[in-house]
Image (cartoon, rainbow, N blue to C red; front, side, top):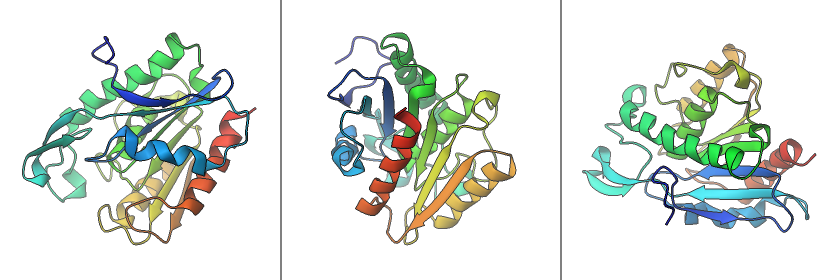
Length: 227
C-alpha cells in the first residue's frame, strides 16, 4: 500500500532494461488492474524494450446503474443515457488520481511526459480521453478502447493545446452491447472535426479485446515509445 493517498494501488510490470517509457492502462467498471495485466505478452512488443506498464485499481464506490453495489469504478454511472451517463464530479475526482500516476512517473521516475501513453478500456477509456485531452504536458499517445466521451456530444472543458496533435487510438467492438459502437464513433468524429489526431478501428468482437487487436496496439505502442 502506497503512503501517498493520491497514488492508487496498482500492478506494475517492469521491462528487463531500465524503463524509459510508460503505459498507464485503466480498467473498466468492476474490473481491476489484474484484469488487464496479462495482455502485456500479447502485445508482442520487441524484446529489450524499456516500457513500464502500470495497471492501477480504481477506487471502490457504489454504482447507481448496478443497484448501488460497491465495486471498482472510476465514476458513478447514473443511467443508460450516454449523453448524461457519467457522474462528472466523480470523473473530476478520478482525473486527480490519474494525473498523480502520470506525475509520479515524470517527477519520481524521470520519464518524460512525451514518453507516456495514457490508455484505458470502457470506463478507463473515458478517463484516458478526459485526462489526456486536458493534461498540461504533451503525452506520447492516448488510447481509448470501447468507450465514449463523458458528455457524449461535447469535448471536455479546459482542453490542453499541447495534446492537440498527440496520437489518439480509438478501437471499438462491432458487437458491443455495453457501450454502443455509435457512441465511440461519435467521440472519434467529434475529435477529428476539432483537429485532433484520432485514429479509429473496429473489430468483430463484443465489449472486450481480442488477440488481433492487442497485436495492433503493440505495433502502435512500439512506434510511439521505442525510438
